[in-house]
Image (cartoon, rainbow, N blue to C red; front, side, top):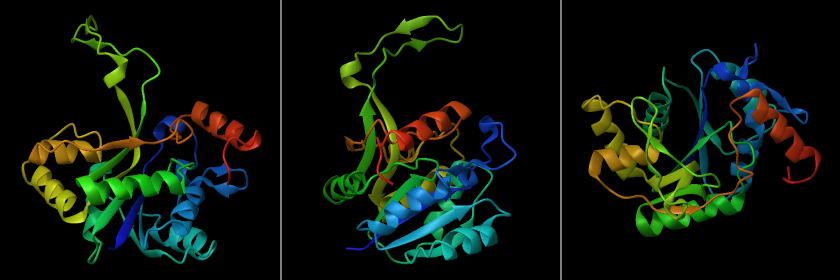
Length: 232
């Protein structure tokens, strides 16, 4: 079987409050996007599609892919205005694969083990979504922010990436969502759920597999590196 990873690096990073887009912010001497690409390069995936901002494709090709000699990056493609549109551009750039992994490049500490678990789940169940159990109590609120429900933490998981699927399944799901202009899609698993009412298979991620979205996240990521919590 052939496995293809889509690594997303097209976000504007507005919540980072930085003049530098978050995927290029330096972490321990390397741009943030380097780490996810490095792990996928070392993993069992066969190829990588890197999706960048509209104006950053050539920069990423020269300063990231060529500079760090990522041999598995087959193509660098410009993304869309929203995340789901960027994912779709990545899906359309794939030529003949069996399983596709969709990963946020702002999650630098993904591991080969997590990648493998999502792939094996996708092969067996059709999907494999990295996630971790919620540590905090979750409240469901109404439009007035009044709590109306408290789901048991035993059944609440926090979604991460990679989110991995049989390629044809997720491609058709995205096409259906785009055709019907379905709104408020928050992750790739939801695309499959909404399009075909298919449940997704949750697999173990890691609390270290955080997404760097705000300055606080960058501080945490830096602390992980400095104290050896993650291996780079």
